[in-house]
Image (cartoon, rainbow, N blue to C red; front, side, top):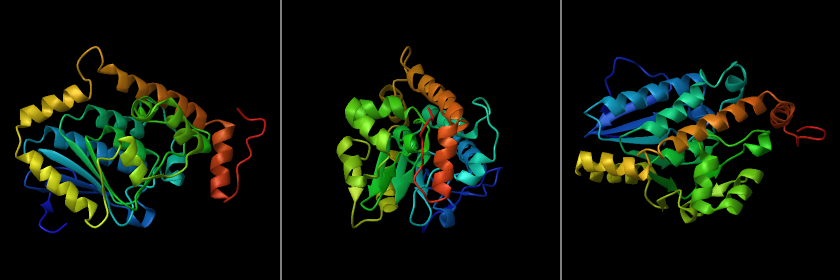
Length: 270
């Protein structure tokens, strides 16, 4: 990211690279050796960085990007399973709430695979650009879980009930072009690096009326009462079922099968 300077804050992020230039803040997931899989600490760091950016008058646009050749491989399972969590204390739920409440424009530059929360967070971005090699994967049902991040509300709004069912039930990769066709991705980049294009689009926004952008985003996100609670309520409802399922036998079998590189056996399990 040539030409960018380090974003000076009171907090130093260990797994999120934050850089600010010309009113554009780039938040880069910085675990390339793990395909930028999220740890609990990363959830917390990203929430803090987003909240700080939303309050910082020096930031007009936020851009998300993954280091290396992946956007995010979703949860780091070893870290994820080691934490005993409640909905109220869940760093993942807190991050999703933060995404849904951001007032400033948020752009995703998807440079590779986007799995689980790496894919569902895209529903809360205002603009999503993807490299042609990018793949979105929603593996919740195959893992004995349920969708998260209000994606069970937002995906059917884009593609209809039947297509959303197919995507969620089978958890098969969605290509960048298919995501573009369904309306989740604005543009697929083949020859131009996706981050470069995303920064060009972000720069265009910095020259627009900040108030007009903020109010337009709020209207598009249905934050005017009584509609503003829909997404927030769905995040909470999904989170309750997700956590309950995570402790159940189907999820335990699916995760054990994944770790053991075998097919899961859900016989006799709900």
